[in-house]
Length: 446
Ligand SMILES: C[S@@+](CC[C@H](N)C(=O)[O-])C[C@H]1O[C@@H](n2cnc3c(N)ncnc32)[C@H](O)[C@@H]1O
Image (cartoon, rainbow, N blue to C red; front, side, top):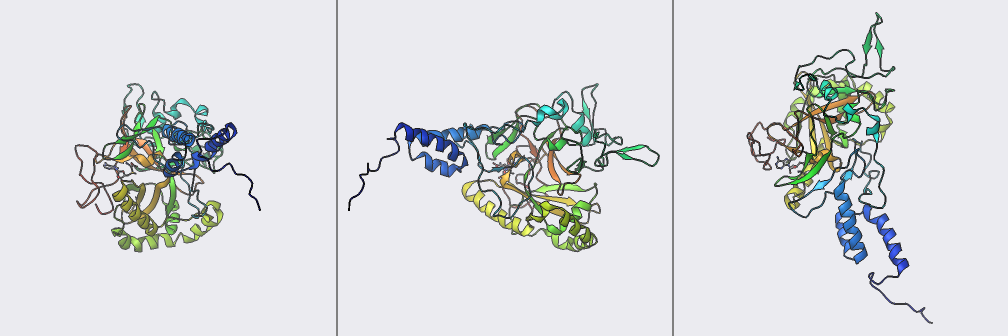
């Protein structure tokens, strides 16, 4: 018996020209799929892969959105050597399917192949892409009006006409008994702070419709900056006038099954509050007390809910993030935060029912799958962003969106209030730096 002569093992720094070019091609194809720790390991194997690992990391730091947004959102870090944060990117909210179906990896950081950007901006009017000269669209959706003559934006309360939303879709037009035009039924006006309605999948109008402000992706240059004691933060990279759509909180979006129908049946006039739960062993204190109300509230619409579920193919595959699961995840995130300083992005949105006696809870987890909004830090003074829950016609779930609540200068950090601090207690320290800082971050038990 004889063995074929083997050239013996060679290290990868001794390659022929063909091997080298093959390796480069493979590197281009494979490395952008790797996590930072896998990249780090790969870079130890040989010079070529070390070079490509660095190129991938550099390319990732240039755009957190992987070309999925209208504009690149770069990472800036002058504090330490962390070049970027690794997570799966979604430009808009997605319903989580079963864990086996959810993607584990995303192609990110290739200089070889760059996906074309959505490019929707070119189809849109200047006002819709954040032209500071025209802030009327965003403001009117918030119940505010822009006083163009004086150049000042003043809060004039809710003074909207029947179709002030700007939708011109024929299908969206309702004609009254006396042949008077009622306007777009998708637009419910701004009946209370925190809720707006937009045209959606069931409308014929396209993205250029003025009543789809939050559906076109980001329209202002933003950047993600490493901030002392706060981790990363989202910053404006250009002036943003007050009242403009900035971004939505995109994530795997889930909620209590039984509350979905309730939500769909709720009218405006519902207040919204956000908290970042930190110790989720703690039970949502209102939950028990209000369960009775919620049960009563959902009972009479359960039939309609079942019909909705049947007719919504999305929902059939949707696995809702229950409060129990949210609490389990948050416990893990808190441990990771303590051990490795990794921030979580699990938000609890509570909608207070008009009666004020009950509230509905949504758990939105952008820790693994999310978008740039996951980098927005808390400010005790309310920050410069308003959170608005946007419902669109025909869409099953509402979107949580951020609008500028004041003029924002270039280079200013974007912040909002994570929630009220009602009771002083233990919690993560707050470094918002505002004059009214409470010293701890809002959580379920503050
Ligand atoms: C939704 S994330 C915001 C982005 C986060 N800074 C990061 O690096 O990914 C929420 C976490 O950011 C940190 N954070 C947010 N606001 C903060 C503040 N005012 N002071 C200190 N830490 C803050 C906390 O760790 C919090 O759990």
